[in-house]
Length: 416
Ligand SMILES: Nc1nc2c(c(=O)[nH]1)N[C@H]1C(S)=C(S)[C@@H](COP(=O)(O)OP(=O)(O)OC[C@H]3O[C@@H](n4cnc5c(N)ncnc54)[C@H](O)[C@@H]3O)O[C@H]1N2
Ligand code: MOO
Image (cartoon, rainbow, N blue to C red; front, side, top):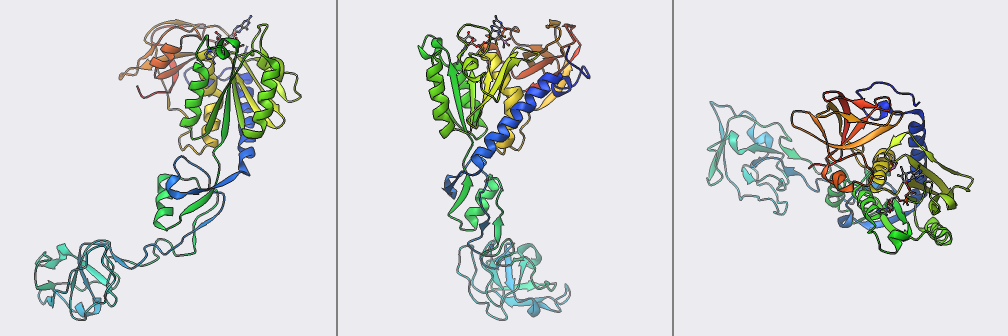
């Protein structure tokens, strides 16, 4: 019997030793995959960056930011010392100079004047403060004279050149993940291209004559491709028949072109379990059952340094294997900020039966009032009910049977 802890907590709380061990083994394999890609870098144009990628070297700013002193407010550019002594009782009135819109060239301040200036526009040489339009009398730009009732401190509402970053300084250190903000910052600093670690290359291998012949569509392969791409990794999909030589040749090829392999099918007790037959004899390999339903049969191996994680072929089992064992660690390796699914607990809307000694993972939905409804049965071929569900529901291994109202833990896996 697996060791279990609290009944109402999440999956990791319910994890038996062997589930935890398998999860740790998968985490090591994903680390290995991450190390394989670590040394591989490419130069990417900043406008082509999207999903998180790690910068492979420090990036220096190609210019000062802001590139020139500019106004933080719509108002009047002035030389602060010319307004020393202004009070509400004795305001100082100045003639209005030509307006300075954003996009204007940096000009020179005419002493004794105030120039209408817009947010982001260059502060003219000789002016050193901006008085917001709300603080002048009248609060208008279309006038010939303007009055100030308080002296602005020098530097007021002026964003100095280089305040954010100076040219040649480290803008983003090596190891930073590209995000909308980093991509924007690189663009603003006129950096044209950056060296990044390439995305993790994940090969997805579907095995089975029924898939290779086209008798069944490769639902597993296409679903995992989407799951991997969603995290920002770079998937390739491969289908092989139940042919050991063909599979060996594929692993040989993938060891040169991939960082990680996910296989589906061919690992349980049948006569044509080619994935297990090819990989199990390797020195660094493990195939067994974990106390989980579905997705009991699991395996992994290392082929000439290439980490391979093997899922059972039933479609629901494949997706649950990916969710529980691979997705959390792969998401971290891909720089996903919230790598874990949202979790929670709630009362079951209906009673259920579950195999004693196995953590059962059911598909469900959670009502606005928190009630947990099951969607479809427990069978691992019921992919369409998995697709209709929005939550995975965890039934502890020691439960056997739960009544309506009993609390279960869930992970949210879809927004619908
Ligand atoms: N005697 C036993 N039989 C089975 C056991 C067992 O312990 N003893 N375990 C069962 C469980 S549980 C599972 S899960 C499956 C796992 O089997 P495999 O990993 O070997 O998967 P296959 O036999 O190749 O396929 C199972 C099922 O999934 C379909 N499949 C496979 N690949 C795909 C794909 N890419 N896309 C869509 N569907 C796919 C395949 O046609 C089969 O129907 O073994 C049980 N049997
Ligand atoms: O583990 Mo199998 O995944 O129950 O169908």
